[in-house]
Image (cartoon, rainbow, N blue to C red):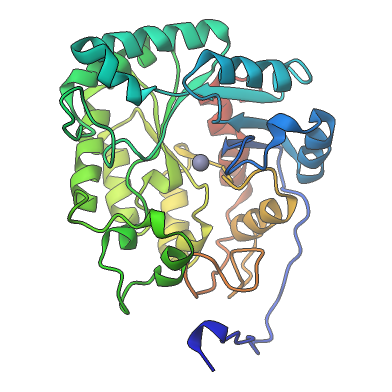
Length: 346
Ligand SMILES: [Zn+2]
């Protein structure tokens, strides 16, 4: 038998809780509605989407797929907000490729684009992980995350009151050599374009340190670090950044696999930073996945798969629930996100 065909079934007899509804209304602060992450809902009927969100108890959904061109942003705003004006927040993005054409004027131009996006109804800015990995300036030089030339962009987001949800780098193991010691070996095998082995890519911690400096330099701008601050493997590091930067928050999207394999550390982290952590899924409006997240946050169930598939997709380990108390659950599920998105339910 090949190792890749191994499908061990746990023989543990332990409590298994089926959570169908979260204890509180939920704001999904990190998700998508277009391809490839959101399931192509920009081409499907909105009432079906709303049925799903109702089934999962999602009262508000942040769609990060507004993109950088007017066309996509308008399309999303028209499609989703015309059907349900209060149910969705659409975030725009930065057209990095325009750096070539705009030259030295790019940061000012990008800041102006933010204003235009806000006028059209965007409620935040999504920065995709290419920033720090592939984004290049007009000379073709890789741009560091803390490049001061971009200060006008982050400053303008702050002036406009647009939260910046930013994903930089990726799981630490994606930066390591892809060999028999790499804990994400199977996942990288499925998605070879997710490997950012350094070199030639910058070291993981170089990107993270630049990010931390950039967030500290813009205390008037609200930042949300995607995927537990882009470093779920090291909650001590993320906690230290939260301590240094009062304008910084994190979402838990696509990372219960990491959090639930360090349940004691994760539980302490949620207690300590209860006001700074947002719920998010990042897998489209998938009811089964939502229920897994609720199970992780609410129960003390042990040793369960963090994915809905047969083999856990981010590594062959199982997770444990962290049984958060109600006052913390309410903050994670909706209060923190409502505050940052300026929704009245806070
Ligand atoms: Zn995402």
